[in-house]
Length: 218
Image (cartoon, rainbow, N blue to C red; front, side):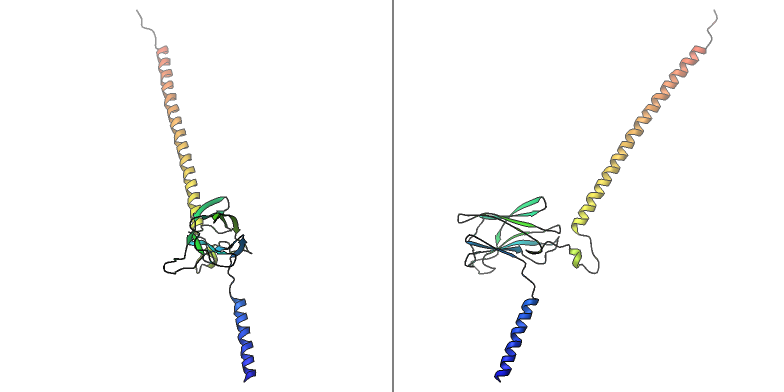
């Protein structure tokens, strides 16, 4: 009986280890700054362009106790390429009802382009200055993915692709209108010059006729 128990225990441990290895990694970055411990990443993973998501900050003290009194003393700048947007952080924890996760703060937005994003936290907490950057990568938290990677059966164009096409169409339309306007102006000028030429020709013809007419006899 004891031998069967030992075998069952070994199999159970191996099964738990296997499940642990197979489970997806929680793609967040942990960093300790003084008396604060930051855990940063996307609120929903994997992250796809065009779908609502959030910057997630799980804030705790050095001992791991959640910090629930951050207030509005800390903001996050979301950076993509040369573009930056400053956003407030909202707590997901309600101390009155106990709903949500203590120390879990979010900045909700819709990432509209695939690629790497940087979350820059700026502010203070109880006199401690905070100025920390976290950038998505293969070794930190997930970059934003193109939704076409998981679309089936058809891969529809993204909002970014549609916007680029609209901008391109508007540019082409503006160029056509400009060319047409220029052509109309040129045609108008040519018409005026033709009328002036005809008028001058008529005057010249009249003068020639008068010159050829014989003088009256007395």
